[in-house]
Amino acid sequence: MDVILLPGGVLRASVWDPELRDTTMRDVSEDLPYFLRSAVRLHDEVTLRDLLMLADRHREFLLPLFTDLLDDFVDEVKRPASGDELCELDYLEICWECYSEGKRFDLQPALVGRNHEDPQVYSVEAVPTNAMGHLAVLLRTDFMLRLPTVRPGRGEIVTADEANLPVRRELRRDFLLFDVFDAVLAEITVHGDPMERDRWWREIGRRELDRTEGADDE
Image (spheres, helix red, strand yellow):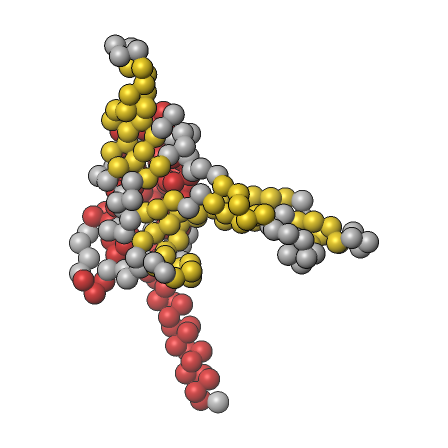
């Protein structure tokens, strides 16, 4: 099934048309819950604001995912941001993050900030949603897998890199529509609601300032 999210939060999917006796692309935005477990593509102009506004339109199904914080972030992303408040990143990206510990392996969708021609990945956990709501959200389906292995002769569990074994770099996994919402939720709510997030960020700034001033006094 071909499912694509368009700018403005319009969801289109290939569905069976009994009159045409064939599949055809049509607007299924109102039927979003039925497509949460479908692989999805994002138009390259879909923004973070589009995703949050779409979530708000289907709050009865997505509130368990966003808990009680959805209203706070929808309200925030609606508020205009002045030019100097806008995030200077080029775009947002949803990618796969791999975690391995012992024999356990986990793959989680994650929302990060990116710039063109820049390999650096930036955390956006402290960025207000209205400051980055205008940024396009792109999907990166390829990822690097580092499976734990056993060092020969020692029985010690290490990564493939540490054992000097080749790393598979050509793996790929599509994103479900649920994964897209999950990645956004996990990043923007990591410190709670917008007020709690801003309070956490101010505290980080004070600690950094105190550390710098302490170093200057030495």
